[in-house]
Amino acid sequence: MTANTIQNAQVGTTGLQVTRLGMGTAPIGNLYEPLNDAEALETVQRSYEHGIRFFDTAPLYGAGEAERRLGAALRGVPRDEIIIQTKVGRIIRPDRSIYFDYSRDGVMKSFEDSLERLGMDRVDILLVHDPDYENAEAHHRQSLDEAFPTLLDLRAQGVIGAVGAGMNQWEMEWEFAKNVDVNCFLLAGRYTLLEQTSLDFLDWCTENDVSIFLGGVYNSGILATGPIPGAKYDYEDAPGEILSKAGSLQEITTKYGVPLHVAALHFAGAHPAIASLVIGSATAAEADDNRTIWDVKAPAAMWQELHDSGLIAAEAPLPA
Image (cartoon, rainbow, N blue to C red):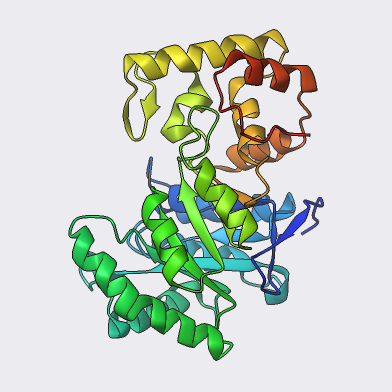
């Protein structure tokens, strides 16, 4: 396999370096549509060929299928060339049903099961996954009391290199950051061209050497498809005000010959807290498209007009 270079970024104060563009593996866990193993493996291998060296996965994705396929696709790749991030907090039963468990024993079982599915002897980053789902108060408490201390022990032993959490909200992540010696967070959907609600949190992370891996840069679809009928926002049909705002954003980007999804990707990566954009790919064609988008340079005048329009937060950093 050959690679095209993508810049690296340091993860917090650790010695880990991630590519600024990462691959999210939920789609190869059959998130949107069923894939066979050959298709999934080709997608991972194509991402690697394009220079991606940071891969995010989780037991939740396809009840272990994403981890299994990721490991199979990367077999034979020098282990020190890649950074693997997975998550704890969900356990897969033999019947493939999944339950929450943020206890110390649960974390260790989740970790060991992930290594087995990946076919690897280590992962680089472990995140507490979605403790705000369902019984959020209990999961939040158990994460602080058991899950994070377990991850910190593993990091102290040199078993993993970095710890954090992966969620769709920034508020609980910020609380964790103030109470736990974390290195990084995966944050989905809360810092995009459509919304910058997490801006204060990201600024805090910059000041405190906490890295952000940003997912959901298209807000579940609308920034990829544009404001078409049935466009998705936060996993549901986009409401009228979101469709309208997306239309206004698209009007400006189109004027400069830049597709909305290209502008969305590059805007999301401009904040200094963002170490990597974790973009899901289901097919090799999508992996090709993501790499092509990454190399596009949008004109400075477009960013300035978006800023001056009031459609994005005045304090949001603009791409260089």
